[in-house]
Image 1 (tube, rainbow over the protein chains, first blue to last red):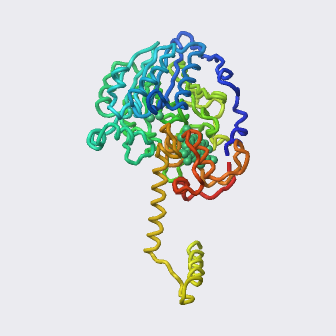
Image 2 (image 1 turned 45 degrees about the horizontal axis):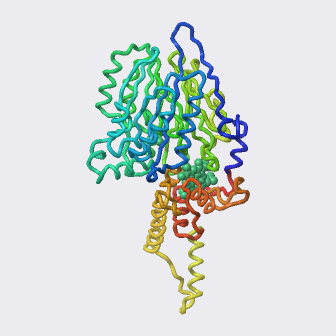
Image 3 (image 1 turned 90 degrees about the vertical axis):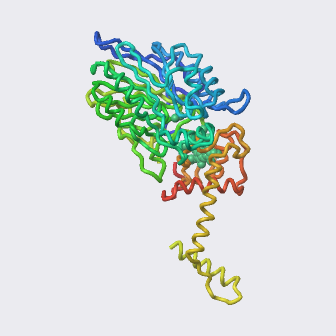
Length: 356
Length: 137
Ligand SMILES: [Fe+2]
Ligand SMILES: [Fe+2]
């Protein structure tokens, strides 16, 4: 499989070779919408899964992914206004892992906002993370756009508090994506109430960008590509003209449109995941719109990992996915069609993208 | 088909070893259950190996299931196949060993190591129902 794949996907390759060769500053074309509002970009890094071995040793492969994303991000031209980190800094929520991840992220030359991932949370229910990074859900305004960050990886009370002998056991179960003892993610009532209140004061014409770790839509329950109360959260966003939801967790490119809401996922810096349809024993619902990414080449450890930057033009999001040793992909909101679309590959099932 | 074939094997075996000649050694529901239980216990062991941070003497804590939830994207039905990075036709065992040596930074298992048998059994079981397609890329 593997090499043939590489060959077949040769046409996607822009630059090959050393790290430096792939990190030429890129020019990010912005669409100017004179007078309407100021356009801006931000970068989006997610799912680094920094994994502690012992003492001063961490898994090299995952470290490299984050170091590379940070270095490339620093070379963005024009400069992004800020960076979002989409969750799963750590693998098992250990303070060593969160510390080391933040140390690597400290090289970023921009302000960074953080989203909670399940791998940051289930050891101590987010205590260490919050001590360093603050609130687990919050909102702010930036250049006429309302940003909302949610902690979407909560789950029910009984699972959280009554089932496990300690935080370590709880974390290790939730860390196994396919562990049948896991539990579906949810935003939960407390946060939904907060969100309703937060959005009350926001004008319906104001663009809203929501960041969550899990998709606020239902794709595949077995791997928690899923948020149990997704519909309730979507309902709170219905009144707005323009809503983008950006999520991590899935370690692959996905995008979708549900009503007024455009969804875009982030790639991981650590490792890619198979698309759910490749699991032959359970049905799944990858959005029809999504053109999957290339199958990963295991012989190149950074393949199918990466990070992304988002161009917020006129309140819509265009997401550019930066892939090492592959040309980048841009998924942009298509105004005529009213949904996000890959600007180059509009159709599914282009040969190298076939997943089976 | 499969059952018939198995039965005739059993008959041949029975003739070969039975002092009473042709009294065929039929198998019944209890046998089937026993054999299936034995098989499923190896599937379980394979699942355990897939989440075992010490597989192949690995010391970095990385496990197969981290990148292959439910064994997805291991494509056992496509083996043996030509793997260009390795330069020849390889078996599923060899590819599993490649992943043990690389992401897990471990040492390869012998192809008849019970852990290897368990890995192959688990990956193949999670892919049941998918048609064999050796050589597919
Ligand atoms: Fe993740
Ligand atoms: Fe996650």
